[in-house]
Length: 150
Image 1 (cartoon, rainbow, N blue to C red):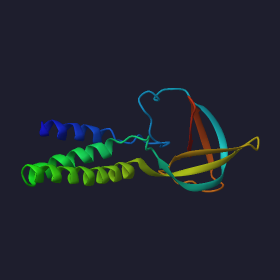
Image 2 (cartoon, rainbow, N blue to C red; image 1 turned 120 degrees about the horizontal axis):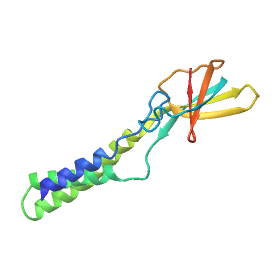
Image 3 (cartoon, rainbow, N blue to C red; image 1 turned 90 degrees about the horizontal axis):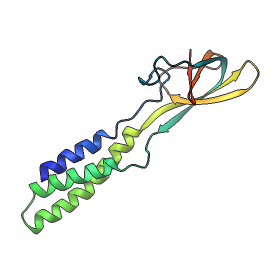
């Protein structure tokens, strides 16, 4: 039974994987899809944090389960084991929540560009490419998603 809980906890932690918001990463669904291209000039660049936490609690649950199993099986017998399991669950849940939050937060950029008609557009994406004010860039748009690239 304890092994089943550990496996379930590890599977839940696997669900914490973060999908990138990078202009350089395409899903297989996006590959070979046509995109509209507009040219623009970078007006401003602002560092932001992209938080992908969807309100899920997989990290808390997985950490709690691992803490309960680990502490409960290693410490004491009877009531001591139960108490250790409860404390382990609480501490594991706190640690799991922190790990999930760290995995879900990424550095990003809010890139404001000026189109040739004078309109301003702001696009937020992962901070994996450097942009400077005055750079000539491309806006690639498809299916409601717009990327900024050089």
